[in-house]
Image 1 (cartoon, rainbow, N blue to C red):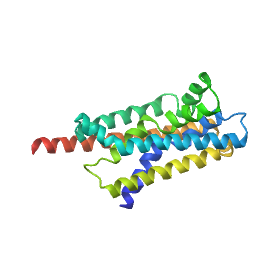
Image 2: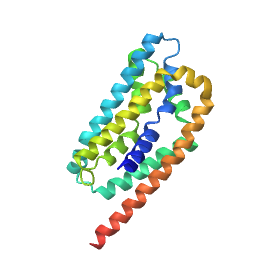
Image 3: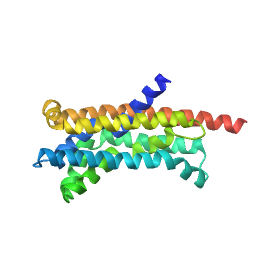
Image 4: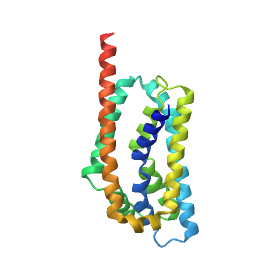
Length: 210
């Protein structure tokens, strides 16, 4: 059980990417008072947590309503996660791309907490997909899904703390360091995505044989 929780923590850490959010937070909070920065970090964390919890609870019902099989969803999810990982590795890093997006569409302190911090920085498409896969009703009990929810909340709490400590952290690792960490996480996510597809194909073959 602890091994599975560790795997889930690593996966959720990679797709949520709290470290990669640090430079984004620095960019949107530049020139803002400490009290306002705290409010922005809190709003972003709460908004992202709400979105992820929404999909954690209701994502399975959506899959069942559409009649999508678990292997098909896992394969599609693995491919999406792989593409997401490839953009982290070969494209603009998370800090670069999301900070640039914000600078082009700045719209007040409250809105930056939602975009780009809450979405797509924290509650990214990869993170949404991950929580749905990790709480599949056909494979996981309510207790296991609750533990996954707790793990996700722990990662979000870490993201909040890192945003509060963003200034001294970025002073140490610099934007280039955060970009490097983001690319390393992209490699880890790519491996996880490929493994997800392989396991789904194996399960699909077993289903066909039966």
